[in-house]
Amino acid sequence: MSLSLRNSTIAAVLTIGLTGTAGAEELVVGSFGGSFADNVKACHVAAFEKATGATVALKLGNSSQFAAAVRATGGKPDMDIVYIDNSLAAQLNGEGLADKIDRTKLKSAPDVIASAWGKNDSYVVAMVSATALVYNPKLVKAPPSSWLDLADPAYAGKYAIGDITGTSGLHYLLAVNKAKGGTLDNTDPGFEAIKPIAKGSAVLYTQADQLLALFEREEIAVAPWYPDRAGVAMDKGLSLAVAYPKEGAVGILPAVVIPKGTAKADLALKFLDQILSAEGQGCFSEKAYIGAVNTKVKLSDKVAKIVPNGESLEKAWFIDPELIAKNSANWTRRWQREVAR
Image 1 (cartoon, rainbow, N blue to C red):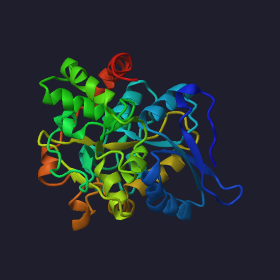
Image 2: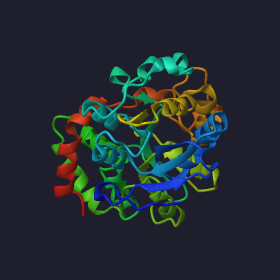
Image 3: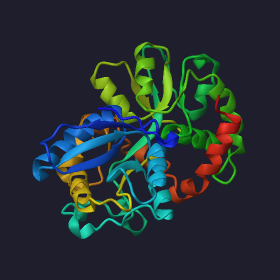
Image 4: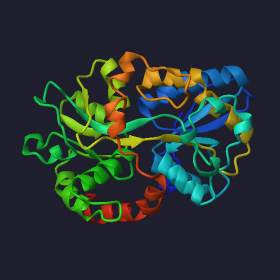
């Protein structure tokens, strides 16, 4: 069931209620949409509801929308636990809007890699992914090999890039900037290079699964996108392949944060325990083509070929979330002035 939020900053966030027993305690979970939400239901929600008797309502959106929603509710959150990019989780912590995660209440905590825990345990990384280049091998003779390939006339009118409000859009901008010799302190090269690319993009997408229809109709042949989304679409028969740019993919560390002020912190921790458990992690990795942070999970060969793994993982650029948190507002304002249409 979808609910329209009145606050304009979070109007794009959709609510999906999962039917449960009348009177059962309800946990509100912020989740990315599309296949990600489907896998959250299959791997995290189902086991949690069975174990606790509680029900889950998913609110769908992207990381920027969730951060805006947590800020807008000012310590009285309408979500109890949220999947969010680690850079925005770090931002919320800096603003005093993230609750400290009590590891002693998590059975799975000892099995989670140490680097997954955010500053002061304000969040925990739940999986490992990346922004790479996804293409249709039927339409692209030679796989793209660089972030700068989208500027090639051969792709004119046949690509799409993300808006900066989404993780892939920000990552693409920063990857192009780095390839052009820029730094996180000097993004001029990236903005100059991306202006004509954005102008020629079929759409500046804000939700990851917006690309599915464009790929299905063969309106685009290539896009900076996520290997996990591509893997799920490939399983459904879509002609796609993943290319890791020679400069390196941009690593993604989707995290989980418990907004400060929730009245259901204990229930949220139980849900987090399911997310981090070997069962929950293994299920999500296999269904969503995404890396795990629980050391007891072993990836199948099928998944290992698509997710950042081996050389592609070694070359991946994992940007300091604190630096992104520090600069993202300025980058977004500049994007709106110079790039957005």
